[in-house]
Length: 103
Image (cartoon, rainbow, N blue to C red; front, side, top):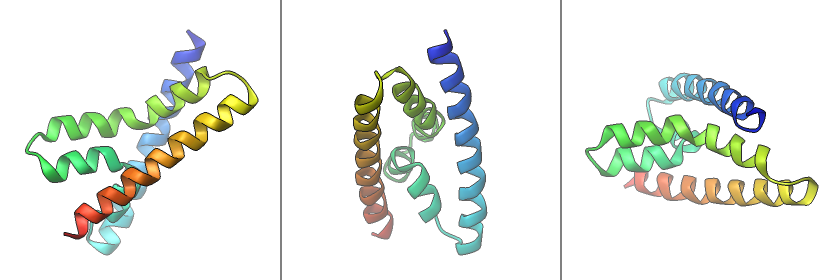
């Protein structure tokens, strides 16, 4: 239970923090770039489909899922490997999202 409940709470807190940061930064530049950087998967779906609900679900689940994965991976090296894989996929999705947004 602890391996799922606490990571979900941490993921929700991180999501709320990044939503607020994205909104403040997006308001400063009047663009979606900060939101795309923080939530690339949901932003890609929101930009290319008319299914806002799917994009919003992806935004809501992204960081809780990240934290569940990191909490349930074995010790030391596996956790670092999981963090590197999550970071690489996040950066790749961000680059795709930014390229799509620029069009």
